[in-house]
Image 1 (cartoon, rainbow, N blue to C red):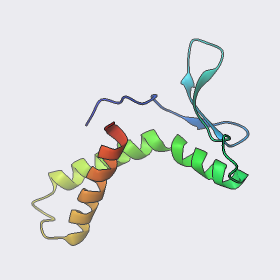
Image 2 (cartoon, one colour):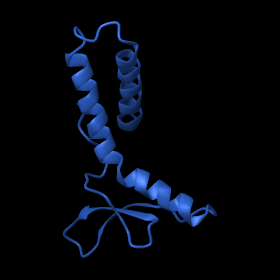
Image 3 (cartoon, rainbow, N blue to C red):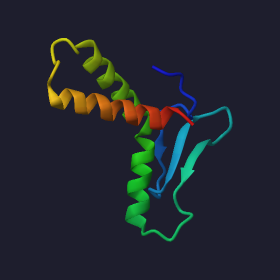
Image 4 (tube, one colour):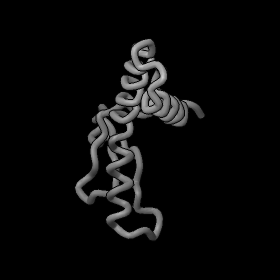
Length: 100
């Protein structure tokens, strides 16, 4: 597993549904991770994007855990196409999330 370079979680969605906040800091406000209001997208799309962004740290951790589980059981699932596909997709997602 890699060392996280992103804003650490847990992240949460603001009351309006289109801003993502990170953990509380020493200042009165939490870290603003992303504000999804800069474009002309409809509100539901902005809220869906905010939910996906807020779930990012947990999704990365789940992908890393799934990848480790698949790789540690490689001998038992050898030749299973679903396992090969899952391993490839997990590695690609982890790389996309962790490398610049």
